[in-house]
Length: 487
Image 1 (spheres, rainbow, N blue to C red):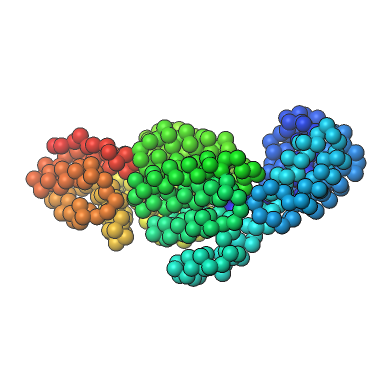
Image 2: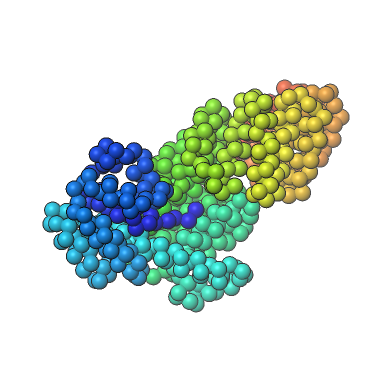
């Protein structure tokens, strides 16, 4: 998600309120405006007209020309060019003049606040430059990009590092190898970036967190753990750097994914709650969505539904289709686990439309999986077999071993419901390649071996198949979990 700076009109409201020392609640009461609306104005979520700003500012007792002067100051200084760090001499002079005009009593606060505005404006400008840099690098081969970073000073931009980190996180949805390549490129930029040592530590910590995330997606959990350890050390080493243009909430978000995959659900939820508290309004919907996935993995389906409904209140119709799809799909999955099949079926048509709009084939496969699960829950065995068999073929073609194991157990349940033990035996034989595949924990392989041996003896019961399907769901986020279910 690309960070953004509020428009000058909105910045003026925030600056003058803070200068006056008023809370949003106090200003809202005096101006007859909801504090939530004031928050939206100050974050740039809502457009603020000049007429509305004048009415709000007037209740704080500022002179009539204060808005014009403040807008002028912001216009002059927010796009002054300089690298990350302390204000340049010209900036210091302008801040001192603004502070003096506002009065000695608030001089220190005015200096700090305007320094923040300068950093925000500078960051926005450098992020725009990074977009242009990335366009020139995007189509090059990885080795060529790395060579340019080593040779050209202008490419060693903190904003380009941040952007490539974001690209790595996006790539992680489809290609772990590309995610790793991009994260390592971002890290190299961070290591070579100009600026003070504490700033480079901060930037390297941010990049290492994305390296950790990419390793996690590639199923290298020990490597991911080491990357996040280094990220924390470097980030803390640069803790005295202010102002900070990088999102600590994003780093906690990424680490929460690792803790979830390690089965450390309490730690993951704590990280997400801390990220929500630190978030500057850019990640709230994403963090709540992530929290629902941790609750799902822990089996807290009711709480996950409540979290998703809270997230839905923050989502606008104009939001990106992928966000809407993830929200609605996760809600449907939790409802399925709760056995509320009718509610899930009501959502399927809308989910198909959203998945088609997003255009990701794997999303469509997972939606078909959900349709097969609902059909099985409703006792429509033929429909369930057709859907789940097709999904299994898709996962096999993509060599997604763990997903193949999961859907195979669900197929085994359907076959056993109809008394087809021979089909269960054939299914078990078709799973033998999984034992040579990557990404399936040892304990899960031991459980699958029990299933295959029992299938050869026609000894698999419906109860065993159900418990194994439930076990595999829980074990994907708890690799050390053992299956206690031998027939």
